Image 1 (cartoon, rainbow, N blue to C red):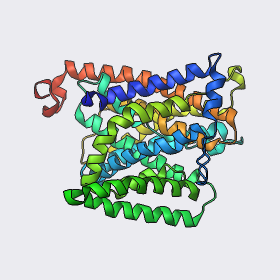
Image 2: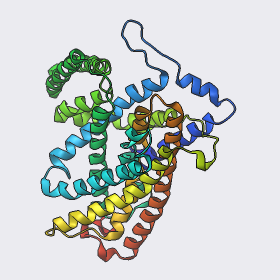
Image 3: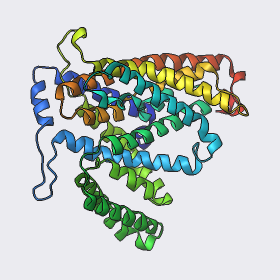
Image 4: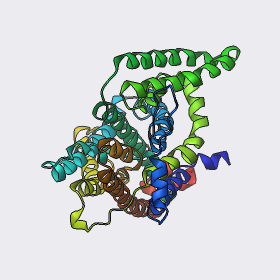
Length: 392
């Protein structure tokens, strides 16, 4: 059962299902009740935490997802595909193309309007979906492709984290930033003591409220509160991080991400003709499936041109990666809410655009992954020895 809860394909299915349920329920006759509930304030008196239920999910619950992402990123930088410059070069250049081109596509639609601040929205890639589709439809896909997708998606998430910290930060309060930094340092130092059975009990009891306090200070500092999860994941000692990530993965897969997807997708579909939809809608819905495909394919070609010592990935594989990366979803939905927090009607159009653009990418990438898997099943001699059916 635990193995099922860690399944990448299950995570992707739950994420998609929760988003579809949220979108459908928001547009049923009782949808207004859910929308009002999402906007209901659930403040904690005396703490300065006056978030709505929707904000508790996007600012609070999603911080746990960012904690897991940062631990995964740290592991990849330490021992994985990002640990050596030569290994990280290709996914890094491809990721750069997958950020720059979608941003330029969005800017092309919105350069002369008031919504230019939404340009980071289509730059993200959803790890859960991208890897989940590979798991569902890519039985015979070579491991190198999965590793490439994982490295690229992690780099994309890192860029998204930077965008959130830099471009979606309100007025800063230095004293709270210093308090959060102090908590992060204490958290990192204490996490090293968990290796000792003698200290494990009291350290665990201290680390949990210390992590919560870091989140509170980060929220009050003006920096987006999910950055607390990123900071805590990066400073956590390696053995502790491996254990925490192992225990949090099922929780994130079956609760955190589906709940966020459900609440983010609780929007009323605009009842306007296509010609009346804003440039934000068109910028996102084109940039995710098309901008990502073009940017990553060009980036992959450029990385092969610059690094001639390593064999280039087949063009068909890079097309597949480009389509997988067009599934923006989690971080794209979050950045959409942050970019247009003062314009609810634009948030609604942006949410529908993210869902539609991601859905197009999911369908096309699912077809390409299935085709690619069938190709390698019929031509196993083209696979590395370790990936051939008899070796799996």
